[in-house]
Length: 313
Image (cartoon, rainbow, N blue to C red; front, side, top):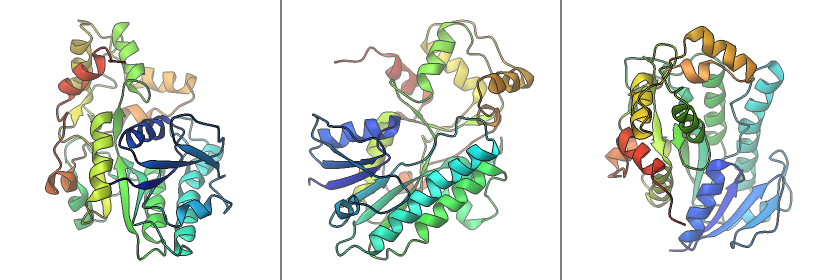
């Protein structure tokens, strides 16, 4: 079935890949972006500032699916000014879309809104899934990113859109050839720098881009899936194992480790936050697995082998 899909915030890594994927399936894709441009692939782009209504609102009325990936990247120094932007870019855009849906004559049947696995606590031992978090509401990460994600989801689930199925996509580290963190990791490995970070005991939750895209398809068409859904492979690994698998996939026998203080100095020089590398995330895809979803790349070694395989044009 061909769907009419609205994609807000579609100019980043995930938005670009999702657009390509949806067009390949013959869906109609309208992208809401701050910098619209003419396209030749069949998608359209319309201006929105993610803050106020405009001509773009007419596209939402009658659409089948709304996907919102809007949000300033967290890979920056979390200064007071940047914290305000990180919060507002997510919460305000989500709240605005909810207000627009509430005014639709024919609201979208489903609204997939980006969220983050950063809502879960940083714990090196206890795996968590959506059910565990619902059973224990205190399982929300302390600190800024946990609060951002909590407010983000409150804006989604508090939106007055009773006819629209709402899903919070709790996204983990997405591994893809052409964007995100994987190209950086690949370069580190090839220069012999892919050693453990800060001792390497922290867990890393991840998902191959192909499974991310397949999961979005799955969620769009499974009417029983609403609320939070973890987009994570079923086998999170410790950082030491992640780097060992990366070195093996790159045929690099050595990888210099980085201590906590080295990471903190490096993060300062690169104007990012050390916690993005040092905090632990052991997230399981409970609801995806329970709904029957099968991962193409459940193991990190398989995912890395695929990503390092020469792409076919």
